[in-house]
Image: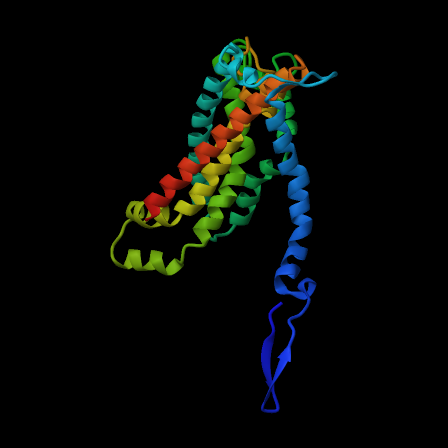
Amino acid sequence: MTVTLTRIGGRRVRSAPPPWWRGRNALGWLYAAPTALIVGVLFVAPLVLVGWMSLNRWPLLGQARFNAPANYAKIADNTLFVDSVLFTLKYTVIITVLLSVFALGLALLVQERRPGVGFFRTAFFLPGSVGLATAALLFYGMLNNDFGPIDPILRALGITDEPVKWIGTPDMALFSTIALVLWRFAGFNMLILLTGLQAIPVEVYEAARSDGANRWQIFTRITMPLLRPTIALMLILSITGSLLAFDQFFIFTNGGPDNSTVSMVMVIYRDAFFRFDLGGAAAGSVVLLAGLVALNVVQMRVLRKRER
């Protein structure tokens, strides 16, 4: 125990420090304890359990048996999982590029304050308030060839002569799913980019215009460089969400046709709840988590180097 000296009336008086439960460090730990408990119970403990499950043959009923690294070794032999990795990466690249372009276009469209801009901001963001599962069911009903309204409208306008197989072929199923995701998330990403755009000082734009810069020069040399941290956040959310895609494929296409739209999370779900191979599903989850962490680390390092 340390003793501090204080001056009272010109004399030095020894005073003991407050008890440990009254110190600032203890008070900080006390404030952080509820959040730490929630994170530990809902994140750390399940993560440790999944890692341990991936090292065991873990039946739905019965005793677990240690079999490392068999669960990881058989991932390469699972052709459906390998195909799902390739499909998920393809989907991630396409949706990230299109979503970024659409969201940036919408954000630039409603950036400046003008009459009616509030209405368009709300209209663009409104699909983001719809749950992804609900949006998938909505698109399934609209594009259904038996009772959906889209095919009759297209035939009435003379655009098509026969029903379009929106989810009947691999390419159309992917196209329809991309349209669903763009409709659902473009407004949300627009809001993220709009926040970054409004954080750019107006004086910077005014100085550029006074120097004779045109709109393209302002966009490429001012807007995009200053918007880079916000774009980085949007890319991380978009890439992570795309790699973890499940609802849009499970509900909208059910992985079809012929397993052409099966994502990595769908394979993990099937292994766990249809084949009851919990150890194999846990191993796939660990591989997916490792890939996500590595990708996000690389992305952050690249963005930081560009900022420097």
